[in-house]
Image (cartoon, rainbow, N blue to C red; front, side):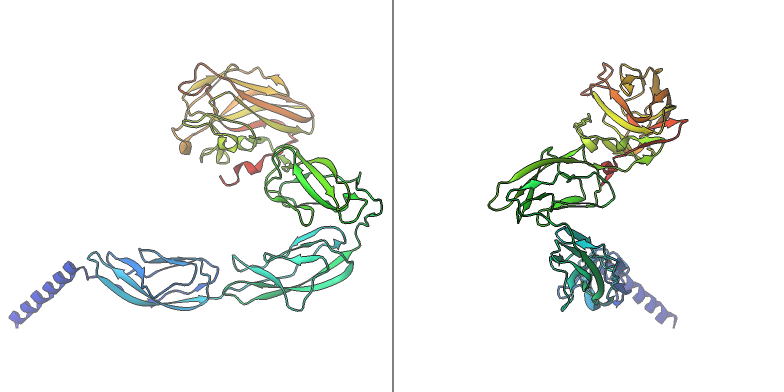
Length: 475
C-alpha cells in the first residue's frame, strides 16, 4: 500500500512538471459576461489565470463600439443591442492556443425626448432653434414624422436644428419630430410654433437702400447671439446678402454666418480680439449692389473680483521666449498645480508687456499684491527690469526678490509679494506690466522675466473686469 501511494505521488508530481513545462497550467473558461447598455460605458474581462494573450476568433466579433485588449479587458461604448455569442482565444508563452465561448448581452438604450416651448417666429425674418434635445445616446438623428408638416419656409436638419425664413403667418402650427439612434426604439415629441407677421419690406423703390436703423449689436460670451440681415436693406425684391470680414479675424468660436438664412447666430464660447468689422453687400438681380460697413464686438462677461488671473489677459499678438522656441498668444500660458487656478503666464524672458483692464465703481486706493515665480533663478526685480504702469503713470515701488521654486513647469511654485499702494480712478483702469531687456539675462534670453500667476488688489470693493476665458479652452 505504501509503495502504491509513493508511485501515485511520483506520477502526480511528474504530471505537474509536464504541465508547467508545456505552459498549459493555465485557466481559461467561457462564461456569461456582465450585461451592458447601448451608449453607456462598458468594461469587463475574459482573462483567466496565467500569462496569456487574448484575441477574438477570426469568425467572432463584439458589438460595435467595444474592443478586446490583449490583457483580456473588453471596454468601450456599445452601439448595438442584442445577445452576442463569441469565441475568444488565449495564447500562452509557448504559443499554445486555448479557446473558450462567451456570451455578452447589450440592452438597447432608452431615449427620452420632451418637447420644449418654442419662441415665436416672424415672417421674412430668419429663424433658428435647436430642438435636438433628446437624451440617452451620444449620436441621435432627427426627422419629421411622416404626415407632419412644418410652417412654410422652415426645415429640420438631421441634428435637430429647426431653421429657415417663414413665409406665412400662422397660429399654433403643430408638428411631430422623431428622434432615432442605433440600438434604440425611436421616440417622438410634438412641438407647437406660432409664426407672426414680421417686417414688411418696401420693394417698390427701384434701387437698394440700407436701413439707417440697422446695426450689429455687441454680444456676450455664453449668451445666444442672433442678427438677421433680412430687412437691413430694402427697395427691390429678392435682395441677398454677402459678407466680408475687413479686420481679418472673423467671428469668435461659437458664432457663424449662415449664407442661406442671412443670419449671424450661435452662442459664443470666446470673445472677439477687438472689434469685428464686416462689410455687408446687398444685391439683387438687375439692380446695382450696395455695400455698408458695420462694427460690433463679442465681449467676455463682466466679473466682480479683486483677484485677476494672468492667464485671462488678452494675449493677441504677444510673443515670448522659451528654451527652444518663441511661444505666442495663448502659448504663453503654462500649467502647474501650484498656480492659483492651475495656470500662469510664462516665457516672459524677452521684452514684452501685458495689461489688465479693471473697472472700479468709484475712485479708490488698493494694496497691489503679485503672485510671482521664476524659472531662471533668484533675482531682485526693479524698475529697470520690470515696470508697473497704472493708467499711463509708472508706479514707483521698492525692489523685491523673486525666488525660483521648482525646476520644471509641473512643480514651479509662487510667492505672494506686496508691491505697494495704487490709486484707481472711477470707471476703466489699465494696469500694464512691462518686462524690459536686461544684461542679467543669459543664453538666448534678452530679459529676466518672472512667472506671473495673478494680480490682487486688496482693501477695496466694487472692482470687476472681463477675463478672456477662451484663453484656457483646451489646455
